[in-house]
Image (cartoon, rainbow, N blue to C red; front, side, top):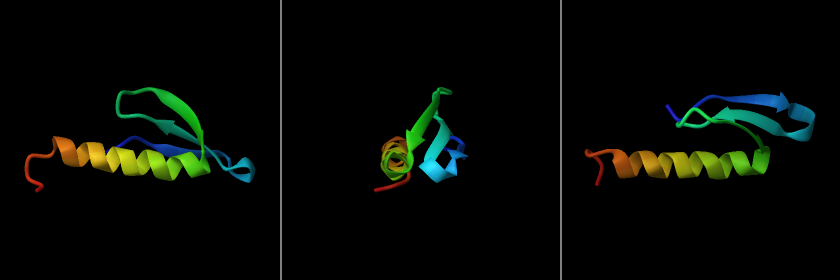
Length: 51
């Protein structure tokens, strides 16, 4: 699990996320997609069963 994401202020497209290290951050919607791509990439790097 990459952490939880919750809409804090949907009208401003702000999301509250909990990072895998347990930090809480508020990010904008356009950052959220980048964050999830990064999290998936990091998970693939750590996973021994993916090529």
